[in-house]
Amino acid sequence: MREIEVSRITEVIERLCMEANAHLPEDIKCAIKACREKEDGAIACGILDNIMENYEIADQENVPICQDTGMACVFLEIGQDVHLTGGSLTEAVDEGVRRGYEKGYLRKSVVKDPVRRGNTGDNTPAMLYTEIVPGEQIKITVGPKGFGSENMSAIRMFKPSAGLQGIKDFILETVETAGPNPCPPMVVGVGIGGTFDKAALLAKKALMRPIDVPNEDPFYADLEAEMLEKINRLGIGPQGFGGRTTALGLNIETMPTHIAGMPCAINISCHVTRHKTEVI
Image (cartoon, rainbow, N blue to C red; front, side, top):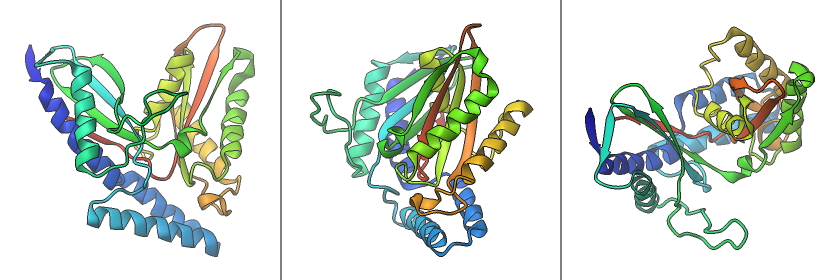
């Protein structure tokens, strides 16, 4: 049994909040550059040039890539041989977010109540997801999620009779409805299976996978490639001004489900698809 002080988790999350907001993952940068080379419209090329200039400045100056520094989504994969000591895990996570957003001068975007509103003032609470896994380590991933894209997400409880075509049509319908709102080129996370809530979580976790790493199942890897191509044929383009690049990537995650259902959730992210991971 390995003991880990929850204060270590606080320290890591504080740092990851700042790093994730200032530095775009390399897979996203490479995808943007590759899409720029394929674009031939002046407006689309200009927008992608601006996007690249923006993330380069963020890297150099260590400042946020986007003014919407997101709601902190924190994923913890906790080894079953770990014993956490020194206080509450949830409080430790929130303290890390609180410190990171204060120290990094990151915008505080969380409200106390979904209807009555009122800013919490420190971007807490985090959206915390925990999973027990083998081993004696803790894998921490912080994914700040902006809501211009989050608001464009959707879920549908399909019956099995809808088949694969029903899922394909739903993906295209959701992206086309989103249009310019999620600041394309976007990244599309798709979750299929489980229950109503699990499908949504799968879609969120799909956004944490690098877009240059295909699904391990060849069937779903092919589906990812097919749907990305079809999305980019929609012609929405960078920031909705038209072009070949509507999406940078599309990741699918699946799990078993009930014989009577086929849940499908789509979590859309903007071109600033941020996440940072560390293992302790």
